Amino acid sequence: MGINRMLSIRDVFLISAIVDERYADRDFLMSFAERPKLSCNAQRLEQLLSDSFRDPLARPDMKRCDQAINMLFDIIDMIPKTYRAQPFAVISYIMWWMGQEGAMASAISALAIDDQCSLAAIVCSAVERRIGPAWTSET
Image (cartoon, rainbow, N blue to C red; front, side, top):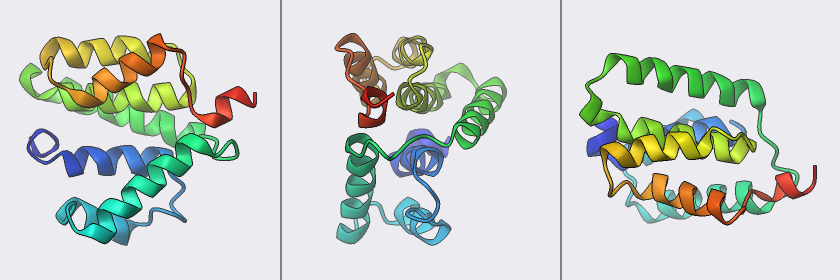
């Protein structure tokens, strides 16, 4: 329920999967989850996402990403359908970031539940336009 009520929780799931814990440690993740509008937290999250997207050396930790995806699918299996949009959206972003084809299917699953799910719409747009993180053009 929290992930639907506080998008900062969604963003913490996302960042913890795609950003190395040296740059997004537990203290930052907890601070962001609790106070996402705090200027320093919002700026740091934006920088982390930007760096992970633009830096060709920011490659996914496939094991950590796969674990996050599996955990989110486990969560989806345990919650009512109406709460599944955000977990599907996070899965879609992680899959997109990893360069996996399942990203679009997960984004569409999120949008089928909540057609206003902005993260899923962003992933759909990126996949349709063949836009990926910098590391994918380096492989």
